Amino acid sequence: WPMVRKGAHTVLESNTKGFVVTRVPTAALAEITTPIDGMMVYDTDVNCLKIYSDGAWKCFNKPACP
Image (tube, rainbow, N blue to C red):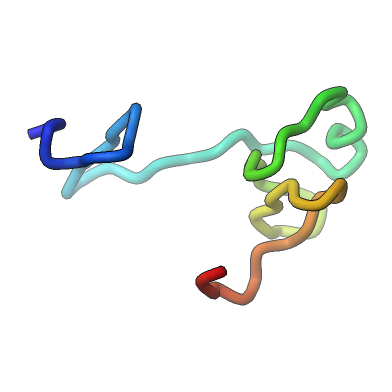
């Protein structure tokens, strides 16, 4: 079945489990010394999924396609 997922290097799939990204407080974001655009963490202080983009961590709160 991984051959069906073209363009992906890693596939996680489950009907009974969830996926949890790294959880950190806001202050710990500064400890990520070389963030890359698209990197994701869950900020436990502000309760949001943050994505690194254009040099800053931003809460992902409006799903949209580029």
